[in-house]
Image 1 (cartoon, rainbow, N blue to C red):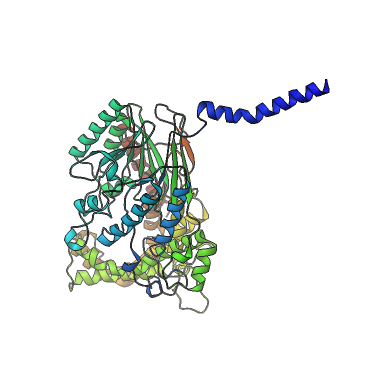
Image 2 (cartoon, one colour):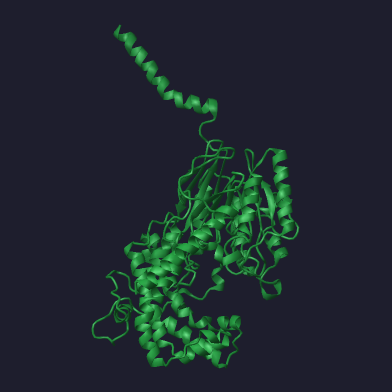
Length: 583
């Protein structure tokens, strides 16, 4: 009897151990129908085009990050980052890599040739497939200025994605390509060449419709890839027009959703974010935006499609091979890179934001051209004075150092206007702004308008504004107003009186309105997650299904869009009135 029981137990245990293997063998397991990686905004520059690391002084005095740039792109470390990413892709079971634009930094031939060769070598070694599409940085001007045009782009990447095309659109770099298990890639080049904007022309839209018809006939589900956003990812993104979103994005997104193109993979904004929208007919569309591979937090996506779910996982480059770095790094830099690359990347990002203050005066000429101010004129000189003052204000330390001149910190300026700057570890306004904005880059932002960081940011911005008002003479402001044909906006008061007004009336009224009605709405979706679903690791509905959504979706129907505008307009009026009455 005991022997029989032992035999039965053994059989049950063997069956329990073998059951998973039997299920996998019989039903194919839980393997996805399609899996791929997404890496965006590589902004590649070969080392030969860069000055030595130790000679780059974009942020003077910084022992670790003096070689930063205003985009916070890890340009010197890019080769090591890309190699680490490609090694991970090679080790995975995924067959495909999608790169939705900005492959190069500025569209130069040496940039494209360098990154294309790196991708070409990888393909030859691994036999994996790479699909690309140009971004606004890739075809910036004519080939005669050492930058390639459309034909040059297609030639350089002829065997990287474009050798797999099923259909091509004449006049752009758009194409379709077969993936596997019933999925087909729709790569849309919506860039306006030599500009930063994005537009889908009527001809391109017609071509896209033809690909939709063909895909339905062939029983294929389309997955879209385009550089600029298909949907908004933060509150006021649409104000930037076609610089961030595709022109007429609401109309285009509605059309795509109703055509059945449910998923788009985008880049451009260097942030990790996922938005969804619902058309008037009830069809859904998701915009999966991936941040820059060479900018904090150095993210990429691993994506899988199946009949049961679309799974998106966000991964990060958290280490690189320091032997691949160029010469010129000091010991402290190499130590931080090798031992804590995420901390190095975040520090570099914050330094890049701070370096913007040094670049403001350099932008005088470019801004003057837009305002049609000629060099040597009083308007040009006045603009330069304003830009220098703003730069000085943004470079001020956050807190006072004992024994220094009276007004050399944000804290002291705020004090004069009756505002107390809260204590913190932040060294300046831009250091604080970088900390706040880095959450948007990372995704799943979790600050709110009442957080200590955002409250301190408001206090600091008000102080910087009042500093600028106090230090830009009235005559300078009036020269600018006259130069812009805004004579009715000038100030008919003396510099002395104006300074007093700036410290009292402005701080108590106008600054409050500016912060509450301009800065706060601008931060909506940047300091917090603006729309459903989550931004990083999510499981979403597959083609053919509609799951319950928790959270807001992006308004693309006329009713929801215009209702939102009306609601925000009246809220702004009410809040503005409250701010002024409270003075």
